[in-house]
Image (tube, rainbow, N blue to C red):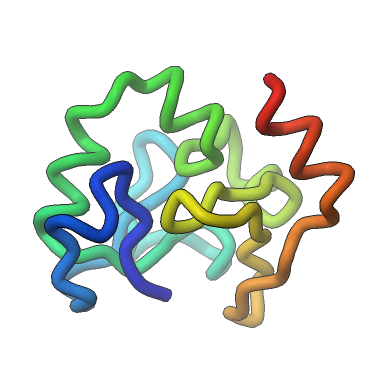
Length: 104
């Protein structure tokens, strides 16, 4: 998985510089399941770190608990809603569900 920034694609380097966690208080390298983390380049990591936490939560980059990660969609690269399942793969969110999420 590559970067998920709000500034995509302007500054994204498309590199795996680090692993970021979707779960507050847990390092990306320490998550128990692939759905709780994502690969990110440094510019995108800085962008997400300085984005309003309410927005990052609404976009799915932050979840409340590890058990929510696989069932919480992410607005990937500002283009589509997806799920990070634990395989690790990206699975498209249903259009009806994505519509509900974008309205929230």
